[in-house]
Length: 305
Ligand SMILES: [Zn+2]
Image (cartoon, rainbow, N blue to C red; front, side, top):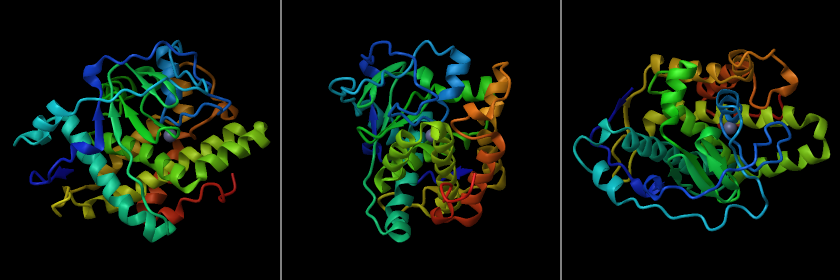
């Protein structure tokens, strides 16, 4: 992958709350199985497995109070410097720019609906969200209540060191997956799925898997079209995305499959407990999105099991 050094990072698409010290208290353990939490994190299960599940999302209905507003001043400065793309946070902001540029065009084209932008909140350790207080331990997630993506960027180190997903392209894949949830929120897919879970609690996990796999597929559709995305001045964001990059995304998808996670944590593999999909399924659906480049092909809900 090569980013275009002339692309301008639009930091207004992120909300940098790393300096503000968080403020959320410790939450109750996350409801990983029941799907009643508002959170649709990429790998909640991973971190619960790794960290022990002591922290998590407080899914109280009254949320986490007034969300804090970050301060983008230093990020803005950093990301307008010549060597901006050497910085992890600036690169991540640029990935967000690319993902949203894609959906701005694709959503009306494919689904006939307007895309509404969503910011990504950079936080460190803990954060208040519309879905309650969250801890880094839950991993990156999307909160449908405030329409924001949340990530503690130190997560990538954990992804590389503990799960072995080392490639840089793991990063845009993770973000594209979370924005996939935002698109599902905008399209009403997420709300529909939650209602279905309430009607059919037996299948709550299976329904969650469909939602997650669709987000993987949307990430694949973005990856296919990413080299066509540009910044506000029309500068291409990516110079190139190679087969190796795509392989890194697939590799990451596999590493965070529910079966892989269960195995890693020394538990027996139990498909009934899957909430995000097996390694094979995650690979398959990302690949489906990538090979077709068409979000319409991501109908995990209509696709049998
Ligand atoms: Zn997810």
